[in-house]
Length: 312
Length: 75
Image 1 (cartoon, rainbow over the protein chains, first blue to last red):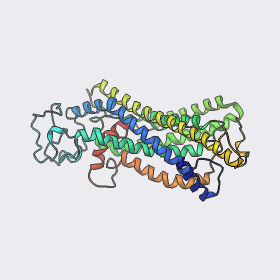
Image 2: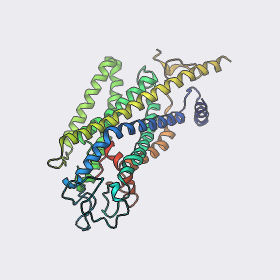
Image 3: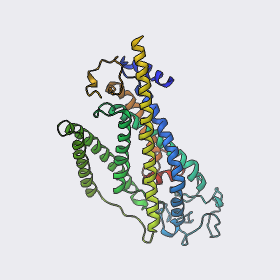
Image 4: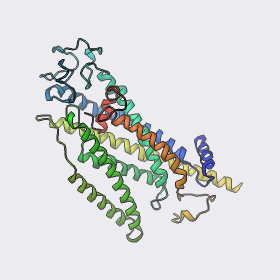
């Protein structure tokens, strides 16, 4: 309640417009809070379904010579995972690692792809606090961006309730940001990926996401236009087809990277990639449904209070 | 549900129907908030990967697992 009042005051200072009971600042804050919650739940999912695959893949890095971006020629000392011929277990390493200068305790099984000189963080830090911070920051950021888009879209795409708008927006975000770009440039576990192409892959990955978001936005505008003449269902259907055609053409045109090493376990790759999609599905479901629930409750309270204000 | 929400007076109680927030109100938040939030995403997803604002690999190493599991190209 206090949040709403704060938001209303600050927004009315900006424009003097007092009609909306919930203002942009408080919508943004709510989005970030729901995003943090989504990040926490995604963390739980990632710990259970994602980390076993990451751990197993790291165990294979020596075998499949991942991390070719580590300057092995320049650094003669074999680093943690690069030059081992045998697959090594992380816990009890009897193999002759030349890690005399490594500050991190060997028992922690640190995983590094810097210069092979030091392990900055142990595996337990990377899979615990590191993963948690990554997902929570990702959550706050995506939740905030989601809320800003919601603030614009809400009330502008047909006669949808805030809750339905948020749910559809969450679904659209999952499809446009994750699912479709991920089909072209799928997530890769450790040990997969050629370090020499990281620049190209990163650029194309973000380009694909940007193009997908632009196409999705265009599809929503198109659906809105077509709905007036052909009805909401037909408009949405035609716009979906348009989005898929654009993205299909684009993904056929862009280069493909297949850097999965020969003999890399197919079940591990599958397990890892399904886990990454699961994490994102949990994440966007919590944002779309959680944010919508909160906004609808707030707009109902706000409308009630507004009515009272008008009557008195 | 009322379709013509735009024609309602700004001070009328709105039940069920949604009145859009004026773009002029969203824009300052979107410009400032959007920039900060995209920067946060950059640090989780790409810093010290293909590009680096800070030297070293501490950021990359700390968010390593998150980066892999969120689908960002890591290395």
